[in-house]
Figure 1 (cartoon, one colour):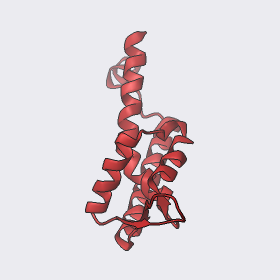
Figure 2 (cartoon, helix red, strand yellow):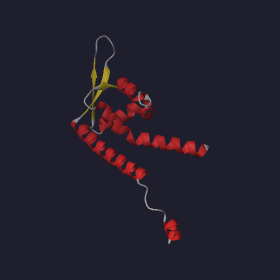
Figure 3 (cartoon, one colour):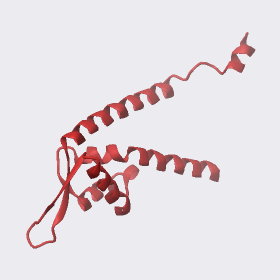
Figure 4 (cartoon, one colour):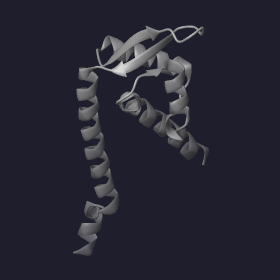
Length: 127
């Protein structure tokens, strides 16, 4: 049973890793958030709770890729905060990722609801 649990955990980690770009872009859609604010939002979702050590390198890569813009903003007496928002390229990338995600989910749902034909060895026995 431990192997099954370990396999499930690895699968969950890979799913999260593969969808973090989409999740970050979706979280920034239509708003500008500073890093810890975004982190708090992410931690509100069990499936996508991540650490600062994961978030900030990801945001830096998205900034270098041109899909996220970052700027510092001073608010009152507090330390300045770095805010992140989508660029026009980020908006297009989010739309593309969203369509691909929805298509993939629809394909998986179809396969789960409509299992394929019986394996070849069963078809031979049925004759």
